Image (cartoon, rainbow, N blue to C red):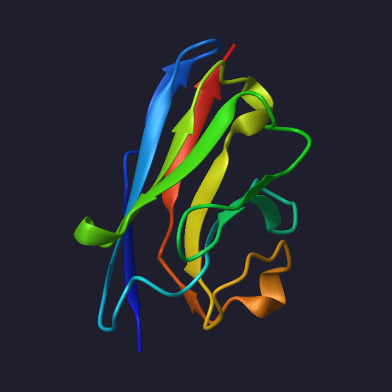
Length: 124
């Protein structure tokens, strides 16, 4: 079992930055791939970014490529999402998720564990 707790959300203006953090507990953290997803009001949850167990492989949604950076610190059991040049369309609840596998995935259904989410609001 894995527990995930996100933090770092908030209200910012367009063009500003935020860094989200996700702390994992409950099992050895070094192996599972991790991901960030988001869900805007009235929309389905969508993939944002993923990172493999070692941190050597990452993947991003086209909508955030070049603006967001995912990273992880296995010593701290933490995964981060650095979000730069934020846009109003980035407004959503952001969820951290963990797989039971080492390799990355962009598919919501392939993640076994989920955090409660942290809200990001970007004003224009």
